[in-house]
Length: 261
Image (cartoon, rainbow, N blue to C red; front, top):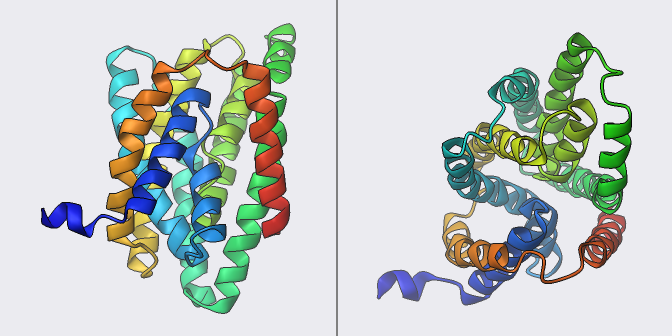
């Protein structure tokens, strides 16, 4: 009874809604959850980012186990991304600590970084199919060495973006992976993207926790809603026209991102 009494049912319902959308559309939860916490519930931006990072680490750990069991993870791609993202994440956390986290300046920095990340995410969601078709037409034009180097660079960029905003590892990372590895199946790219996000979001989330920017009760409430939400959303895949989904999501992300910048 004490656990039920401690739950914030508004956060549970929010987690349920976001989890449902994530399960149905595949869009990263941070793109939806973090702005929701900031704009609707007036949660401190850095607390929203830090809590969402640990939320993502826990949920994506389950996804990694499933994809790994199915053999749908390209571990060489994951390791290349981690070679760039983990050092970048640590540098970003050190910068936040040096910058005086938490403070008014870091609040503005995190809000702006989140807004920019959402503005970049919006077109990557909207044009996902077109980019995938383009990458297949130009498959083989990029050398293996160049692809490997660009994968490390991608990891570094995501490390900074995710640490500051909790957004980017899903939509943006997946979009670039499609361009770099057109010969790999979408299932393997999704599995690799999720596997990479686990240590990235865990380390970034633990860093925010150390800086005092994580709300554990809120995290528990969100997870209680998001886990069944993701399951329900996964069962509803294909029930809504994909183009309509991507158009609505891209529009929402653009509007929210513009408001935060």
